[in-house]
Length: 358
Image 1: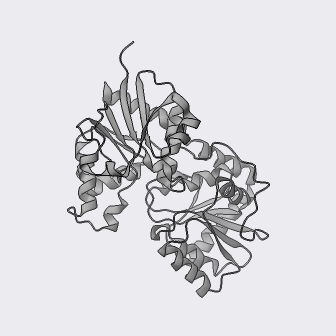
Image 2: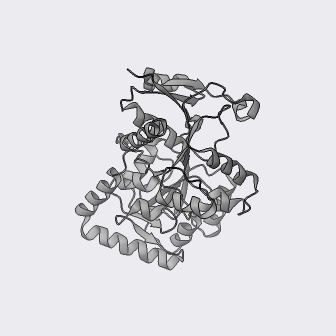
Image 3: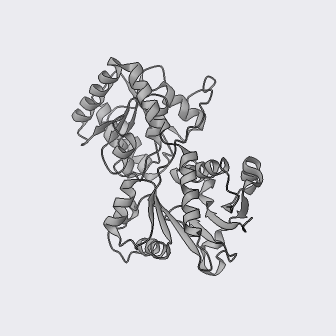
């Protein structure tokens, strides 16, 4: 038997599974745990090693994450055959030169910090890109966007779609929501940042009286305050409700019981919530920006602009189409969601590891 090759996965963002990156880290690891890789020894980087050990046992090795490892002098000195930087913003890097796989979720930071290539965040990203042995992207859009802003070295590139985070349906019968659900409602969930574009659907709700809107996510941020003011200013406090962060059970409760799922984000490297909503056979309405058409395919309906009247028209036209052939549409949405699979994605990452290490 040939000697095992060692792979280090920089996964410390697993600590915050309320975020897209935390979900990505956890689901990738979970997918890998279901596969055989006798030729490789994978090491996970995390703060809470006991939690991972309790779930995955000896399937992996573990390295306890330390904040100091973000600094050059305190970088991890143990030599690995391959280092996998699982997102483009991670500041934890290997001390010694080794083969290096970079996974790019998006380069939205380029637009956010200006297109100045000498900006600190852009320079940090370029350092990663220029030392990469290979690059994986979570969507075709993420690949296109990266090439738009940066000169990508002539190295192997792969697009590996994320899987569906909902791998089991939870019993939500005992869940008690902290907002009213006695009236038909639309639902959305996400980080409270500007690009999620929640204000567009709140402005649309001024024209809709027979439905509520429920939004989940960490609304204690600056953008959350803006949304709260918009709700109040428009007299929608008895129609638009913020739940704050929700548990997996809570998220599934709202997705299971909503009339439709709305996701008007204007910048997404991938977009997991629409897939989750389609798992429940729910009609899903997305903006047609960035990666979302790649995710929703022909199953979703799309807003090309955010004029409230237009958004309302697209929404109710889509709902009428859905209701006219409900059973077939539900099945179609569920099949679309099932086409995104973490075990399949993990197998593709393993294939990339082996190709790099050949």
